[in-house]
Each structure stands twice: as structure tokens, then as C-alpha cells.
Length: 236
Image 1 (tube, one colour):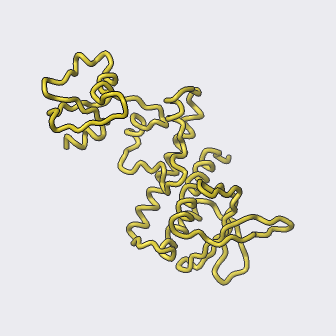
Image 2: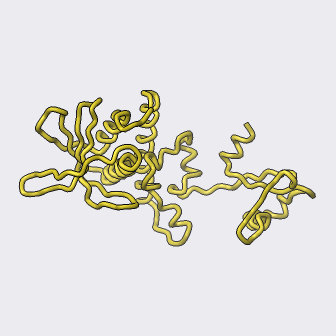
């Protein structure tokens, strides 16, 4: 049985990486790919070190945002025959062939990038599965928690490198996690603050809510709210 969320995650992973690749490394050559009586609007990318050529269907072009992609075909350098390939394989080939596009990455960096791409794909699938199980919400927080695909022009928008699965359950907005901030007291003369309107101290006080009386700073001190992961790193 085809898992539609897996397919959507893989397509989103390719879309983000391919858009970044075309903008930052190699814009490719516009071509038409003909199958029968139909012409597909495509961009063609040659990867000499992989001895392959890719053709990527562009279903919708954007001058300033992200392109939307369709089918992907590949052929050997000297071969006449094209065959369709999966998005994840296309990403793999683009990463390994990035050096021809001017990148100075080394093999270790290639492996790390591939790892982050796969992490991003897996996280996207996990978020889509969780969204299917959770009742729909409305409002600002719901909108923040529904960014399942992440930044459309980031090569690994959901990799969350360094965050474990159990930490994602608590901290990932897409999984509707909830947690308390950690507060540190700092000497006021060591703190720089700025805000477009409301004083930062007032904002911090509003975050504390009913706990403001229990976490009040001493005279000459200010409270600094931190994400628990930041707090843990600071304590270490």
C-alpha cells in the first residue's frame, strides 16, 4: 500500500533541495522532454562526475520564490534512453555531483548533508502522520504548528540536527509540544535590551503570568527567559 505521507515528504524534500540547488549552485538548462505527443517543461542538469544527466519537470516556475516540480528523468552521459527516477535518488545524485557546480565540499561534508536531508525527510513524514491523528486547530499558534514542510528555499528545512526523537515530542511545534521556559537572573548592567514599543522587562513579566511573584528578580537583576535546550547548553 502506498503511503501518501511518505510520498509527500519525499517530494517536499526534493522540492526544497532542488530549489536551493538551482538558486545557489547551478540553474541548469531549460529543455523540453518529449513523451509521445506531450512536451514537459524541464530543466536539465549534467553531473559529469556521476556520468549522468537529470531532467526535472517544472510544473510551475517562480521568478522570486520556489519552483514546483513534477517527474524526474535520468540518462547515462552517452546513452540515449531516459528513465524516470524517485526524488530521493535525484537528491543523492545532486549532492554527489555538487562539486561540478562550484561547491568546495568534501566527501565527509557530502555524507553529513545527505544525513541531514534524510533526517528532514523523516521528520516531515512524522509531522504529516501526527497531523492526520490530531484534531484541526485554528489561530496563530495553530498556524505556527502547521509548517510541516519548513522553509521552501532551505536545503534541509526539517533536519533538526542534534535534536533527539524524544526531544522533538516535547519541543517540536509541528508535534504540538508544550514546555516551560527556563529563567536565569543576570545583573541588569550586563543586559542589553531593545524593543519596538513594549519594554523587554514587561514582555518577560507577561510570559511569567501568575508565576511572576515566584520568579521575581532581585534588586539590580533582570530575568532572561531561555528555551530549555539553550538552558541545558548554558549549564554545561
